[in-house]
Image 1: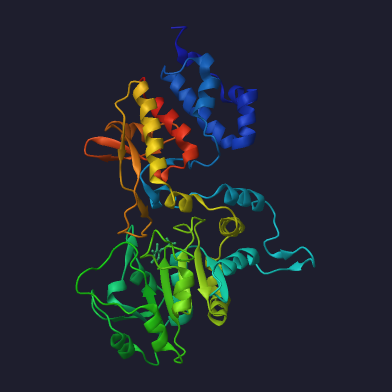
Image 2: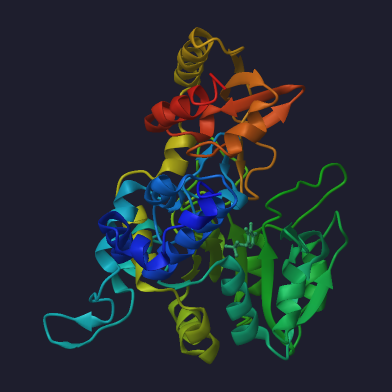
Length: 436
Ligand SMILES: *Cc1c(COP(=O)(O)O)cnc(C)c1O
């Protein structure tokens, strides 16, 4: 029994003192390395790892960063995929985050040495991008923007909202539930499919805190329908002092030629909204954030409300937002503009490489989507590599994980949501499975 590996399990202290593991401890934290050491010791006791291989086994088991979130290739064809972290940030935004992540001048005017307004540069970038806005505010996400608006403008009062705009965004998030949780009373007007200006007019009164329009991001109502647009509503509310707030959701700053049905911030404000709300990590292609733009007096009221402090964003979000607005086009916008012929050529090139490696791979056309609750009816052309069905699950566990989807009995890797620069990584992940 002297060869029993259990008798030769290296001691924790010995392993932790190994120069490579000590260095890993400096970088990742000793606790994390110790946990990996203990798991390897158990595998040695179980006879799965030979004692001399202990250090290598620990190194192999260590994550690349102290956080466990890993980069994943999004081959779903859904450009803004909520389960995959929505918008991937541009390299410029990532650099801005790194630069801002230490101590930084987020609230200090370095010229005077006095306290400065927080997030001034990001706000300036927003106002440059949306000139119809007098002022802007950034909070944690669009849901936070809605909560802040409902609390500051309509708590204990009425929030007028069309029945057809009582939207559920996803994962059980229902905008009316959020609004009611702030203490605002919902005054629903119209029916599911139709609402008129007279319906809105009939609901206005001394108790009205605000009128809210919510873009039905992820569905459309067709047939016998009628809605009141921001222009008509704004004109009807002019002179009443009742603010018109429009939640446009997707975060388009200006009209987009490929997405004619998506509302944008500039047009919505120009049409007559007093405030517009949007997400930062959908079509804008930036960090998770809630953008509030519009009349200075209303933005100021929101900023001064005590709840704002609980919803404000951190320095890295401000940095990423500013870089998204001022820097090169972020990936989501690039993917939106992708050329179909190029997508097909990429799919053919990848499929040919996979076929050379003996895989049953072909290039196919496959539709893509904006996702993230945006432009539900807008088909986007896409091209995919088609592989046997079993690849979907195996690729999710590959390094790096690749998330495609199964259609029919084939796994499709849709390239519309993969940046061209990642084709090599995607190929390596697939080829890594070829000979197994
Ligand atoms: C997506 C969306 C929201 C929620 O936005 P978050 O940034 O995820 O909080 C709210 N309203 C509309 C219209 C949306 O499309």
